[in-house]
Length: 108
Image 1 (tube, one colour):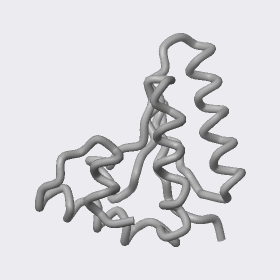
Image 2 (spheres, helix red, strand yellow; image 1 turned 90 degrees about the horizontal axis):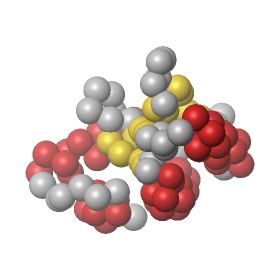
Image 3 (cartoon, one colour; image 1 turned 180 degrees about the horizontal axis):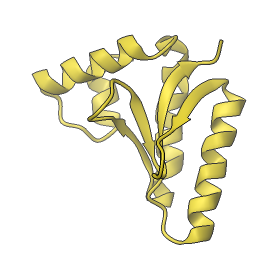
Image 4 (cartoon, helix red, strand yellow; image 1 turned 180 degrees about the vertical axis):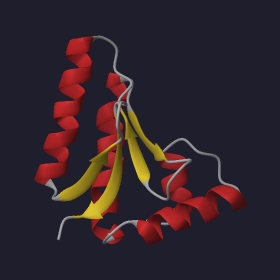
């Protein structure tokens, strides 16, 4: 998948800055070629839950933002994210005190 396609599918406009940022994220993601196969599917699955995959502004990672409404929906969305991580053997890291996860890459 090319960088501009990833950006568009995640809802970003394509610019020199966004292309540079996504390249840094790709370079920092362990075995990105494997991860990319599951990234957009997760993004699409999360949309109805008001959640999404995005580029982190503070670290060179993709991040998963859980913005679901209501305690039960937040909980079930977090469970969905954890199941996705285990099913596809992709390491994620929870951001303390937030419903956000960094996508680190394929598990070793």
